[in-house]
Length: 208
Image (cartoon, rainbow, N blue to C red):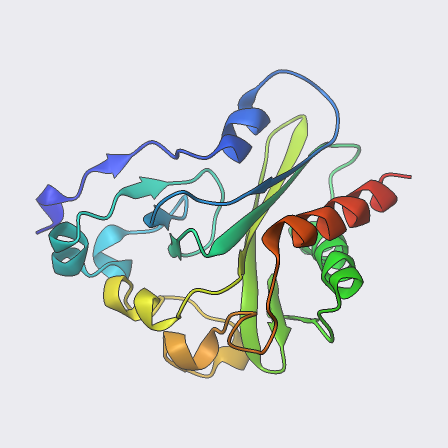
């Protein structure tokens, strides 16, 4: 079935903005308009995807510049992207810490707490993942983007994604729906536009 999977160009604005020559700092908050599968830069389709349901449901498959494992994006999620000029070379862990703190601060402003950092780049409530992120850098810029699960049922991920080839220690081999949750499932009724405002404020404060 692999030969029937067409890898399409990454469709979201965050990567386009990163690729533009303009300098400066940017915060982009995007809601996907469709269900789409996004491979990490080094992801192997045969290791991470269930081909039959993807083809049957006509789900687009694309690949991003940044690393990490494959994700499913839907309109019930929020893409959070930060783009900055590179001042000096830092460890990716420092970048993850910096940008995840901005997201945590924004979530706290909205009333979502406590949110913790776990693994290399995950944000959790309790022991359940609500947000994952990845980073890509070139000689001039840092590109961080994260996916926050607002209301998607994690069982959808099990339909299209195999158990990932790499996982953080705290996952402990849990299936997708035992490892990932959504803000809605955890009891938060989210107005996405107001949440975007809280995240934008947090970003703006980090630039002062």
